[in-house]
Amino acid sequence: MDKITRTGYGSILQTCMFFKIPYPWLPFTTLNELLGIESGIIPPSTVYPAANYFCIGNKGHSFEPTAGGMIALKSFQHKATDAAPFNILPFVMREPTNDLSPAERARYALRKEVIVDGVRWIAYYLKRLDMSNVTAELLYKTVKDDGSVTVTPYVPDNSNLHPVPSELAPTGVNVTSGDYITAQALVPLSFTRADTDELKNVANILWKNTDLAIVSELGLVTAADHRIDVTGNGGSAFSFLEAIGCQIASHMSAFFHANTSNDGMKQVLNAGATEPLFKLENQVINNLTLKAV
Image (tube, rainbow, N blue to C red; front, side, top):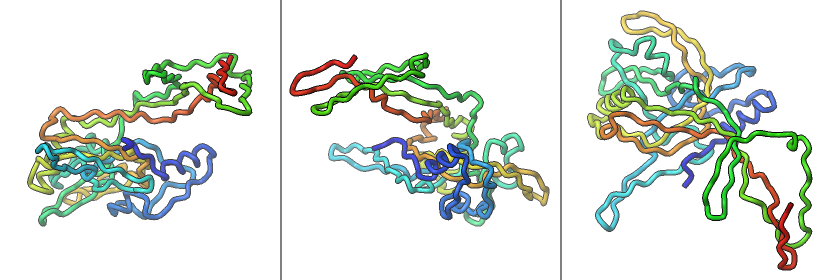
């Protein structure tokens, strides 16, 4: 099973950004629509959403008994057309009189008032990523015959500007090497001790059971910031940077149990792309192996 499932919504956004063409917004693809938060507002055609957010869910798994009396964890696979987690969870739920401070609130988005057992709560369903230390790099990866992998930074030289064609054998087998060029950016999806406490509070509010404070699916979300005016507790008004056009670019399987992981969770998303080098290694013609030079 793939640990990460890229969605078509992320793919078409990348295509539009690459060619600088308008992004075609499709209905039934945003978390705003799912949650009823600023669902009628989309970014202007000149603004491309950015992958600066993530969401969480708790139905990306099941537990199944085995013949030996053990319990096996089974992860569910998302499809590339899935526009939401199997069951989205808020990161935070607070009473209106104990809402997040402005500094705390700046780390979240998709803010919504919800009613649980007749009680009002303020829920936040999106968390902003800290991209301050994220950089992109180009790597050279070689997969050897024994399965071992070496990875080194790739530094182009003058030969890249003067490529030499490799002549393929018209018959037999052309074998390429296990060399790849990889563009990567390591994006941290952190879940701190404070996040852990908030998630246990969410589980306690929703199900009266902190053992259900489980995250088993993550979503890398693209969106754009949109400032709105919000009426807070007691009629006080404040400005809030909400997220609009929220679409999942990638689904990721995970398993985090807050009750047994008080220090939080740190998951790193290796964002980027890998391309085979198609470096000709040898040719087989009439059972004669010719080494490429």
